[in-house]
Image (cartoon, one colour):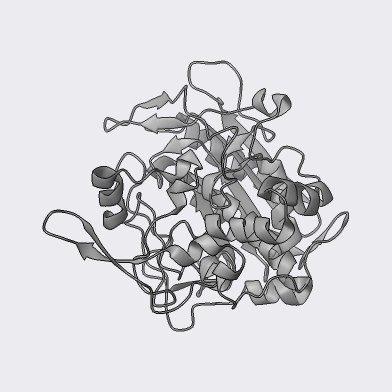
Length: 398
């Protein structure tokens, strides 16, 4: 299997870098329950510089942070310190002050009212609390443009104080929910989220290159985020960096990490919560988190409200998809080979991962490009995932 996968995956990565338009650099890894199946990289960390992309390259992983925050939440649930269905304001009173946005007056003033029910931590993990993102929601974009609502990338407390788009629990809307869930973790643990993650997740899994703030060793291996222009050309955003001394550790998007580290995290989920140095979650907790938590609701595509940051986004269009704690779940087998019931999500700078617990395989694809759903990157990711499953099938057929 190793030789066949190596050749096929290397071709995918090289094609992603050399095609036009291509990506500046990419790293991809696949793992089963026992160890790495493939680790490869191609291209450069930053256009105009000489450092090559490598499996230990450090990247801003944006919303791939969410699953790690969700794991920290689940650990507190197991310990009996957090009730997912209690009002989240019992832990973080500020969330109880959020009101529902009912529209805008003739003068553009937001019209707000009290919500009909409390936000719970389960709603936060499921993205049913009513919170959104400026990138994907026109009302939030209007609040930012016309009323000075700060961006969540600033990692400030003010950026979280956004109105709800609907009464909690009524539907699914992707947004800043997991940032608030991180605040719940901090309130219960009495520590900053990064400290909780380091002690309870990163250290046990050997994830020594994952953090909210870059260490000198991490910075030496950092890939820069690039912006693709309308003409397809890429330019590095030399000054862009997630805040290094943030007011809030943003559990929804704030981590830097490597593909190697993230695959250790994926492997823990493949092994029902067991890491190499001990158990992080119980098998029954993993099974609960991996189930559809939306009932009859389904997740929807994400409209690219800010074109510089995201195209319209939907994985496997036309396929029903639900949400667990805190992953997307594909309800049918995917054309790549991914089994129904698998867990997955992504990061804004075109990072993608999946966790197929039924087949026992998962993987990670990392680039640093805006806008999200860049065709060269997402196409490469799907080709890489397909190569992994074809290699598995070839081994079974041999």
